[in-house]
Length: 217
Image 1 (cartoon, rainbow, N blue to C red):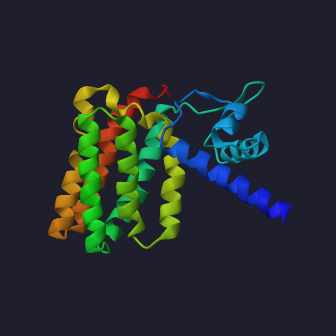
Image 2: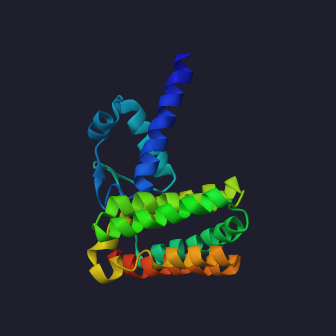
Image 3: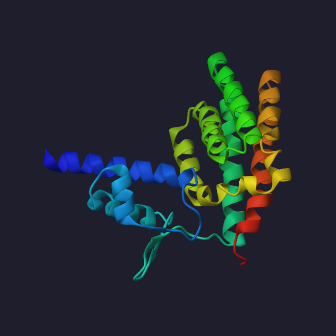
């Protein structure tokens, strides 16, 4: 019974830290302190240490000798690889999802799009990223492929930390919801191919700016 409880706590801790990483809670190069994270989560250091090691094994974090665990700093080549895989995976999920979304789910996407508009106007990067994640998840879940969604979330682990920098250029920041509006128009028209194109536009627009934050190489 104790083993089961410990395992559940470790899994919950891992899921929370994994989600925080996807949402860009930490910046590239930032060191993660086990004691501080344990205090934030209200758990002992053991499940936090296990979760960080698990994320490091997945290449989402780096183990630095004598320094602990650190958020990776992507190179331009690594970022390009991630971007192309995102377009491949998310484009397919969006295409499938566009053909399966229920009317209530379409309405939820519209509300999330409005929430992103409001977040951009308020310069609220956290509010934008939260609504953006829900928007994409809603669409991708409709694809009916848990495996495809799992692959997408794994790729998100690697790009989450630099996503917080989207609002640093005002001109770019103001355009971050354009592709979502185009996607909703495509859904309204019943055009799954246009939904796929809108997702690619969304990823490339953000990607062209985020790439500037990557290390050469």
